[in-house]
Length: 247
Length: 286
View 1 (cartoon, rainbow over the protein chains, first blue to last red):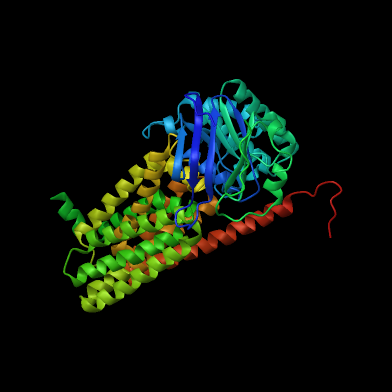
View 2: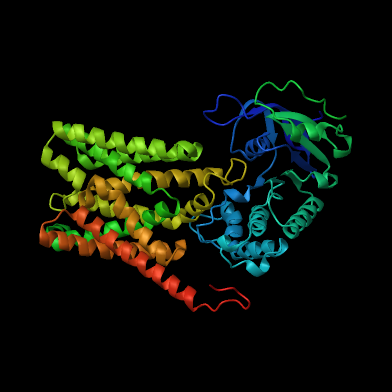
């Protein structure tokens, strides 16, 4: 594992857990993501993907080990976490990405409001920008959240399962925007179950049962590793079966 | 002095209390409803009762102690709800039950009349200081809603999410949430003279719930709630004054009646609109 000054995220023997829980949800994570890399976070539900992303965005604090994150993080949560009964429009949701740079005593700057509309155009939601989020499909809501992250800005874009339970058109649109962000030099960390699209990523971080199984280029993953990550039931506990990371 | 003359007039006292309540309902009640924190508002009222009753038993000033107790419990319970959502209802219910129990025990050892007025409210026993405090809390709530409202909306659509420490928004998002929780407690305590601890939460929540049926978007919900709550309170306080009924109970009943009427009206309008919409070509009707 090489941690360099170019690393945007570097973790060493990282353990993360939730307040009040007796055992960590993730233990022993060790990896380094360089600037401009696109990394997929793989693993079955409950493997620790969301926990790791929450640690990286700063929602959870490490229980042990070391985690370094350089620069601001723009996070996209799972769209299921978005409440639909609050009647805001897609453009209002996207504009929220500019709140952190807006004075409390001022309204959001015109440039940021235009940026929010432009971001919605980028993710293919220009025509429904003024429609309530509750009336959008799951894929459209996911893209609206991505637009909010684009407005937010940040060196690292961390997305929690943006491709789950969405239509192929939305998935393609999200992939296109991610490619553009990568080309612009942004670092991507994306939790996904899309095993058919592994070739899109520079490296993959594979988790199972709260343990890191591997971190490396997708072409170098052991054949049985993904089967192990998705086919085996793991309890949270000591990570005794780790594969050595590919060189 | 002008303030002295004004506050001696019973009608003006009622109007001022109604204005304060309306402002609190608009500035805070709207967000309580949007963020599904109605139960917390009721628990805040109960802990204000506990604080107020203990103050009565100790011959201490009622309002400051009630404010402090309600604000602290609302903040602690509300933050715990964000961190452990699955236990939020239990924690809030516990705060409500313990608050009422402490209040009842303290009332028995203090001055029963004052203790009862803390529980049920009494505009007759409201001091000039109580009215001024309610107006001051309302002014602060309006100012906070104007400055922090957008962050309260962020918390409403995605509770506890999207505002991690490395988002650049962590400090302000968490502070805004905490301020709202504290203000819910403070508002519940400030409404003790109008509605008493039992119904203070109701006065914050029900007008907002009614307004939400008509204008759900926060931009329209907040002012409509303030107008509706002020109108309901004015009507209820003058009705209670004329009929010698408890003001809080009268206001709560009136607000509930308006809510039911509006709910039925909205339902009928929707059904009417649905029946007027022509069926799609080829649609099967039975």
